[in-house]
Image (cartoon, rainbow, N blue to C red; front, side):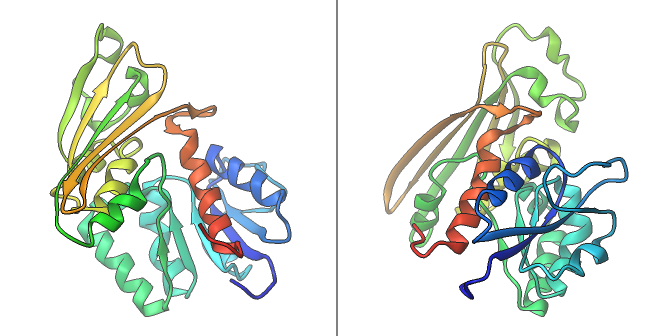
Length: 267
C-alpha cells in the first residue's frame, strides 16, 4: 500500500455508504481508486464513476488491493470467504456478521489461508481506540446504550411484536449481550458488534436498545471500567440521508480508514 500507486479498491454495495466512499475516493485519485462495485440485480446505475458488476469473480478480476463491504451482513456472509481466500484484504462495515461464531471462524481461517487481513472501521461509535488499548490489560465492564427514533428499528426481528408507531415515550426494546443484539437487530446493531470485538467480546458486552419518539438522532453511549480507569463516550449521530437505519458517520469511518491506510502520517 506504499508503492506510490493509488490503492485499488473494490466495493460490495451500491447504496448510501458506497456513495459516500465513491465521492471521497474520486476526490483523492492519487491515493484511492475504485476499480468496480458488486451490485444487486436491480442496480442499473453506479453511484460513482466506477463500473458495476453482478458477479464477484468479475469484481476480483479487477485485481483490487482491498475489498470494502458496504452493503449488509449478508454480503460478508456470502462473499467474505472468497475475497480473503483470494489473498485480498477485506474491510467489513457490517460487523454484526461476526456475531455468528461459525462465520467468524470461517472468515478468520480464510484470512490466514489467503494471507489477507480483515479490517474493521469504527463505524458509528466513539472511543473504540481507547477501549482497544484498555483491553490489553484487565477490562471489567463494557456496555452500550443505543437510542434511535422508533421507525429506525422497523423490520428488525427483535421488534416483530412491538407496534413502533404506538410508542409515546422512550421504550427499551432490547437488553442483553452484543451477540444477541446483532442477531435480533442485524441492520442496526453493527455498533454493538464493533464494540464487542474491541473489548470484552460478544457475550460479555452488555447492550440496551431504546426506541424513542423524541429522538431526532441516533445516539450511542459507551461505558467501560477496568485497570485503565473509566471510559464514557457518547455520540449523537445524524442518520444517513438515504438510509435512516445507518448513521452517516459510519460511512465516514470507512473513508477515515482508507485515508489512514494510504497516508504518510497515520494518526
